[in-house]
Length: 332
Image 1 (cartoon, one colour):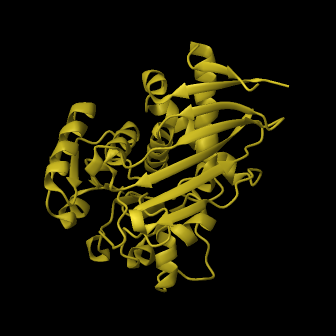
Image 2 (cartoon, one colour):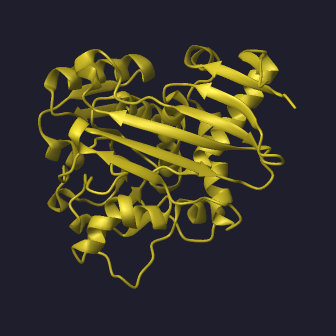
Image 3 (tube, helix red, strand yellow):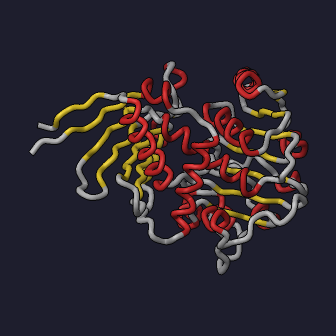
């Protein structure tokens, strides 16, 4: 028996779905759902391909009351820019939560992942950053560096951004794009230390395997969202930072202790083996305390969850049907 599947392209999604407060709200709901304990979310299927400087992740989650669940394939091939291709691409499938039949395929080249990942950073800023942020800093110069700052700016409308990257030209281009997009003063800087010490909100967006931020640079009224470490072996933060933080929060503890900054902190003895940090969903729902004052150090360890993919996938499908875009095909 045949049925219809909706095929949606990246260009169609980009014309109709943009990063904004509504996307931050959507991802916040996904984290809140995780806190209920009713979401079915298996471990990430993660494949490291060092011989081609690449990785592939597969994520999924079933969220009660959502009509569909997503299965997302997310390859990252980090030498692609040398070929004039983006580092990240991929696709997302949406299946009926009632029948398991495929409902849609989003040939988005990672666009939905980009949005939901940035929105997670926005949600972290909403609940963990100081109420007043004058300066934000970002490590990295790619798509996420730009989007993370946009999402954070929605929650904390800072006036200045400092951009650090290994390639100065790329950092300059990133700063120019940020300034044009959100109308702030954005500057590329050579000193990673300066970025941290002058900022109240810092986001790390790199695939680094060595710490970029030193524990000695920590100061009160600082929040760091670390989202680059999402595979074993990656590490953007000095592990001693976990011990210094007044509040350390994970998107999903079981993922962070295998793939995120928490893994390194535990391995180096900077996080007690008998302590479990709160998850972002618990902060959102009030199950755990968030930032208690501006004069504290907070860290959010983001590895990316299948719940985020299911949330934005359902939203994208609803949008496609309401605005009548995409191509329907029959399975027979």
